[in-house]
Every structure is written in C-alpha cells, then in structure tokens.
Length: 500
Image (cartoon, one colour):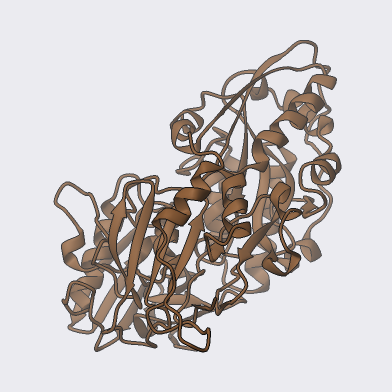
C-alpha cells in the first residue's frame, strides 16, 4: 500500500557559579529585554558522552534548539515536517523523504540529501547504536540532491516517528570524525548555534541569524550543568538562572509557586531486578520483592504527592494505556525470603532517587532481604548497571522519549538484544510480544499489542514499576515562550524571551 505523509563537590556553591558565569540580559529604558538578551539555563545532568547526538546527550541539543531532525512529533505523537518536507512509503520496506531546500548548517554548508545519508548511515554504524535503532536495520541511499530513500529489513510502520528522535538529528558533515566521534559545535541547523562547551560545566549558544525558519527572539543561551538539586533550586530563588530543569520536590516548597510548573511525564520510576544472576534469578524471589514494595508510601513521603502510583510501565501521560490495561499478577507465588543478600544501586543525579532507595531498602528488609546500597553519580554507575553488577537498580526511565511510541523503550530495556537491558532479561515470550507490537500498524492494533507486551513483562516481575513522575520546571518571573514538554525534547524555543 502506498502512503503519503506531509508536514501536517558542587553543593550550594554551584548556585554562585551560575551567577558568575551567566551573562546578564541587556535592558531597554522601558525595563523590557532588548535584542541582546540571553537566557540562563540550569540543567540537571552534564554531558555524558561529549554531546554526541548518538547518545542521550542528543536531548540537550534538542532542548537548546541547535540540532534538528527530519521529522517532529505533535502532542499526539503524529509525525510532521521539519528538515524533511514530506515523505512517501513506496513499498513495504522503503520510504522516500524530500529534504527541505535553503537550510544552512552553522558551519556555512548546505543541507542536502548527502548530509542526511551521511548522518543516518553513521548512526547505524555507531557503537552503541542510538537506542531508537534497537532491533532496526536501516539502509540509506540518495535518490537525488533533495531525496533520500530509507529501506528497512522488515516493515517498520513507525519509521517517520522514529526519525524524530533527537539521536538522529542531522548535522553537517564536518561534525563526524573518522574514529566515530561526533562534535556538534557549530554543526547544527537550528535557531541557536552551539559555539562552546566547557566540559561538564557550561555550554554557550548564540542566535544563528541565517536560520531557515523563525529567527530566535533571544540573543543566546548560557547553560550551566547543575547536578545538585539544592543548587538548582537556589539558582531560581536567587535569580541566577532564568530557566531551571527538574527542580527537586524538596526544593519546590521553598519557591514562589508562580515560578513552579508541574508537568506530567512519560517517565516511570522502576525497580529493575537482575533476572540472570543472584537472588532475583528466581521468579519467586522477584515476586516477593514485588509484594514487599509500597509505592504509596514512596509517593507520599519522597514526592510529597507530586507523582502517580504506577499500575504498569506506562503512566498517565499515555491515557490509552490505563484504558487497555488488565490487572496482571505475578506468574508464581512469592517466596519466603530469609536473609537473602542483595545489592541495590541507584544514582544521585535525580535528587529523589537516593531517598527512594532508602524506603525501598526498608521495605525489602521488612520482607526478609538484607540490602546493601551503592549510590553514585550516573556517569560512574551506568557501566556497572549495564554489566549486571547489581541485584536491583532503581532507575527513572522515560517511556516514549524517542519516537513518541513506547515500543522502543520496551525493546531497549526488556528484550534479549536491548541496549539498555539493566534487568539482564532474555525471555522468548517477551521478545515475541515485543516483536508483535513493533510490527503492528499505528492505532488501536498497535496499542493493544503494546499492552500485551507490558503484561508479559509485569507477569514475570522482570522489573517493578513504582511511580510515574511529574517534572517540576522552574521559570523566573519575566520568562516567556519556554516549552513545558513531557517528552523532554523541547525547552528553549525561538519564541523564548526573558524580561527583568
């Protein structure tokens, strides 16, 4: 069938660092911000991979509006034009995308079909691959100067949505080195140009006046990476930041309510259990852990009610999930646990997680487990989590971050070949359910298949979803035009301004 789609350490002193490194907005006599105003942003996590777009750092480039994708998603998850103006499914395995004319990269080179082929081919060859490509084989070729053909090994009904992932942002050819590294400085196509990155401390972006679309209202963005939640809250309170990402719940009560904006997120706080080694290789012991957890206590105590108790992997950001979900019980009866020693890992970058770990430890110990905690910064713990060094890991995980569809997240976390398989799970029935969901057409059929896959995962207690988060975004008085995006793809926009 032919289908055509068109463009429908740090501590509180870091707060002082923000003030020192930020550039104050220029003001007119009327008190409004002039054309030289800059927006100061305090972000949660520093770059993990040198801002390569093939990693989660891609979402920073997207939130700064410096790197762009072929396709963007609307609030419903439908695909719309960006660097591609339209696309056509030419057969079951191939699509053709028309590339936008008149787009200039920040280094002065022009966007073309060759640029797109270069980026997407390198993405397929990256190690590890962008997670949006987990289980997907792409072959990309140039049809003419402004047309790209993308073929898949198996039918992929969500290919346009997949290409909206920030991890597949198109950069100038000069960004890519022969050794596989990617440097996005001066290589994007958005309204702001990334001009400097100071390691894991700061980043600077300037307005790009040759942008193909709407000219940015602000002169630039000054970013500080502030992992410490208290320091981020202090930055908003003291006026040393204009926009603050992920204000901790503990800090929200200290802020002017007018500056705090709560956004329900497709993000689930989950206890991942090691299905391969240790105590939780036994399904009955996993069932015991599930029975021991009290998510209501965690939501009330740690999140002060600013979260939703999880009924499954997918939360209220996807309202159809609750409508289709059936109650799923453990596949086996819980074991009697008596002195089983487990290691519980989590990270400090999200301020609530160490507090969650304390309650989870207490709840598991009441059930008979002996719990040893290991809490570090994310950059120092990720490799051990992926290697299966822990019996259990508490993770805050976005469920529709990439394609607007949860299959990519579920495949990445719970399939045999998943690139983020912290649970160390490899179950043929789960893999089959995920394959069925991945092949289903968008709409009711796909949603039903997704919920069937969720049920397979929950039935085996592969991981225990505890709660669905709401992000708290801080915006200083005078800030306007900032995105409040559940998918965490947008933050600063071309319309973003700040007045003093």
